[in-house]
Image (cartoon, rainbow, N blue to C red; front, side):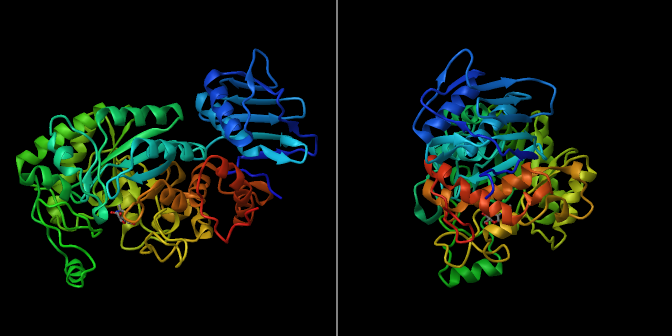
Length: 500
Ligand code: TNX
């Protein structure tokens, strides 16, 4: 049996020696923040919190000298030492330790191991779409805890879309006063006040996660028109969408009326109106100001009712404005085709593992302009895809349902030919929420597949002893079931995984 670890560490030695026994006498010493994290982890898992003392059996320290986010974990029968290169590395060492805790006939214990670990990619993300359905601060913080436990370090919030605008902007107050009430299916909308957003950013930072806000433009902007009709075009229906409406499968979008459907590509900002750019300046300034992290995502996907020339002109200006507020611009891969896009912008690739329709060329164009690429291959790590035909919620447009195995068996450097490893900023698993409306739904779609994405983002492509294989992964994930349960995660008990 494999140790219950994911993402699998770079180097693991499992010793044939006595484990460390976790008892009522166990003590912790060292860095206060890490000790707090470990104590709450152990409380959830074992029902006990070891005392903090000056010199404990479990020692948590920071010692420079390694690479960012790296750590070393040594477990012996007499003690445990976790040494992080930095606070993030120590936090990740503690997460690994939490995964190793197991229950045995004699009580809780940690097997004797020696682990040296560091991430493959600097950007390891998960995206939550809070526009199609709104999720309150408490749910977002629950997602942060889940993601951080798998060593993910970026939370991308898809804050705006046709169905609702979810972040308060003081200079354009009607965005949330009038543009936030709607959601898919007529479900409850909502928005984050500046204070809510600040709480999310802080909660994330305490768990070494950076929030990446997305204001999606120039398409996906119907909700803006609920507040400021002068900023948006009239809805434009593709023949396919018109047919779906005629068949009663989608509601018809009407300007000024909240959109409850799930079609895409019918809305656009007005590209030639100077007001649009006043709006852009003000909104991006406020979002940038409230965001300590380096990234600002400006969308750019599926602008199907924006003329191609207008799209280019708009993205060029929008990217320059975002960057003028001191942020690194991120955009979906479609924007790669725009010649004047700001230099250094990061492209988020959402094509399939085997690129089609030139999506790979668009992603490569970001690198030609000095930027890098975040990989979110939709037929591998789109968390909103069904697992199989029986999954009660979810979509299946990305080459059919995505099994846990398919979410695992792909290699970042193999997706886009000609994209060197250094040009891959990282990996992000998006959760779109057309069909997802509660934390239980989030858990069901995220777990266990988010672990596949975390492993693609953290672990090397190959590790000795076949640790980095589907056969190993499914066993390691099975071993994480009890920990996830203790964390309150309602993971999908996929039949592909040999759960205990
Ligand atoms: C495509 S991926 C979208 C989203 C949808 C998603 C559903 C991307 C950049 N755009 O608008 O929510 O598919 O899976």
